[in-house]
Length: 426
Image 1 (tube, one colour):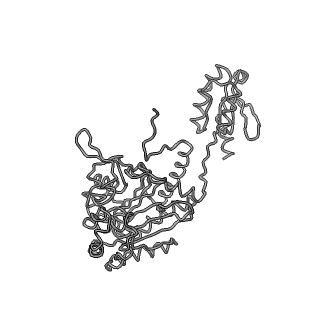
Image 2: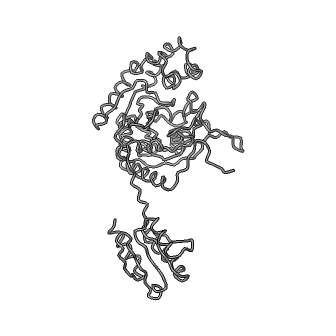
Image 3: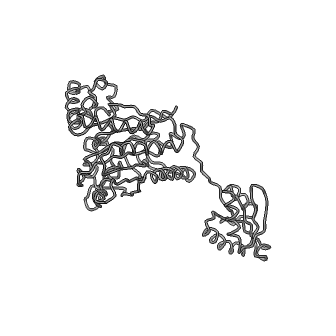
């Protein structure tokens, strides 16, 4: 019986991994320009972190977490989302005490959610995200959105839609919550069991329900925008004005609530409108989470961030027919003839690699013709041939595959010679 990858997981093979590396390097460069620094956090955390940080009423906590007990009887959970996992070290290592505020962090991380696998939504998913903690300036909200849009634009995506909303502050949220309870209570028995529970725990979650999304009561539900107090309304207007100043188009959707309990004020999603992308169009989403740092034991510290699914980013690039430039050509392939040449090849490979040259050789004991075929399969730019004649002369034959031109080069000068050749090609 052959063992296959678990359901909801996928192997990223070398050819695909090269595309991931290209995307990640582009995103890292955007983060550098926006002055974000990388953070790396554990794959698993204490379960309480997500119960408190994400919220007991969310589907993630109630249905989707991979939770287990270790040998010490502690309840641990594989990381289902990024924000709580970044806020925890922010509090633990007292980054809020750094003189450089706000703290601007980014991460690449694997997340784990037990849900029905489908294209672009796996049980093990790869995510890029950013978090800014330490500023309540609405310009920060706009900057985070701008960074996400820049990541997509610089990879070539054009069929994008930005949707934003305001969830208001605590006062606005409380008033809206009461209005939702009054509105949905008469229809309680018509809703799914999850929404019946949400009506008590967090009625805002009802607006995010996929089962009851077509219920007539959803269309007439009270809008949060009608319950924003003056401060919340002014905050949202500033965010919108900054987006306009940056030339970023957006739509306001009062039903956009996101799937996590910690959000307040600005919430947003970026969607793909590319033809054939699929029914689930969301590429990235996030928002402000003032209060989460305090919930996890830190001082009062405002924060905002987003998560971007890398599998869905690759899907969007494919839907828009954007080719990722991946150079898989090999700089040099070393062909050897005879036992002595094979021994010397070890030092040649070592010396050239130390000089930054990409080179490989045959390790299957093939004849010279088969070695040249291997060089072709690797798309080698140059083939270096070392045989008995070359050994006697202290030279090596260098063949440029694109032109067929050949030169005999001293072994002592080979590294400098190849660096010059490859530098001109680049």
